[in-house]
Amino acid sequence: MNTQYKKGVLELCVLSLLHEKDRYGYEISETLAKQIDIADGTVYPILRKLKSDGLVTTYLSETSGGPPRKYYSLTNLGREAFVSDRTEYLKFAKTIESILEGN
Amino acid sequence: MTKTEYLEQLKGELLKNNVPDADEIVLEYEQHFAFKLADGFSEEEIAAKLGTPGEIAAQFQGAEKTGKKKRGIKAVLITGLTLLGVIEGAAYIAFFAFAVVLFAAAVTSAAAGVMLMARLNIAGLLPSMPYAGALLLGVCMIALGVLFCVAGVYSFSSLRQLVRASLRWRKNALGGALPNLPSSPQFSPKTRRTLRTVLLFATVVFGVAFIAGFAVLAIQAGSFGFWHVFGWFVR
Image (cartoon, chains in turn red, cyan):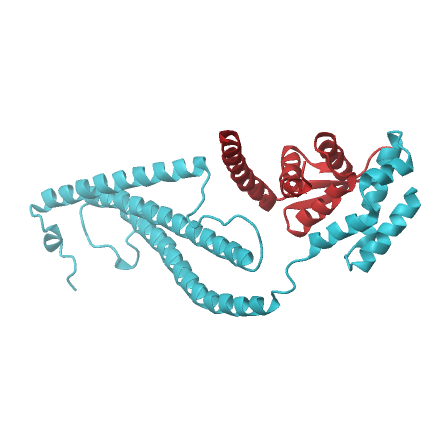
């Protein structure tokens, strides 16, 4: 599948995963890489962008036997952005689907 | 490519692209290696799946950049927003004063109500009238106080939401991409229900107590213009 499509929706996917619960970077990267064909390294720049946009925050959490994990958590802004972007995307996807299936 | 090579190259590319916090980013990729190694992948496999350091660094550069070219437009925009902000600010201050007045009216009405009901004629503020009428008018004044108070709460919430919406709109105008906020006050369903109930209840109490008080005083004075009989407004 064309990588141009994926780029745009990856952000939304990351927000969706974080909307469920707080996760650490590797967890997000693995969850997405398992379902979508992307290079493993692509998720970290997205997390970085979301953080600089103020949609997510990070905190460190100690783990037994290993370095502390950097967890990502949605901010209120992030939650708002997710809810509105999600609705918008689903509507868009539905339109595209009906156009593509019409032909 | 080994882990060390990959991380070194990544750091080099990040620094070359002027990406801030290169160390922190490299640390995140180091952890990625650690997790994958624990799952039994080799360093070469992991590095291959990550994407080349050049590609990754380029993506980080995209993540940080926020429109350098538009600086001129931005200056004009900021000036415009500032001028608009002065006018907006004045309107908000007026609105704030209005809300404060509403609360002051609420306190005054409630105090007058309590004075009427408790026969506390402090400083001769209250006109003379039979106690039955005073009691009903007291209830009426307290209900009026509650109405003012609800109006005050609505005004304050509206003001707060207006300011928030305006700030969000400004942020978006300057290149943010957050959803705009509605400009009407956003109460939780529970608060909204409570406010509505209080409003309805206070309105009914106000109306009933006012009419009853008027009727009682009119009957006792034997005149609809009972204030003439009781000698109000006469010095």
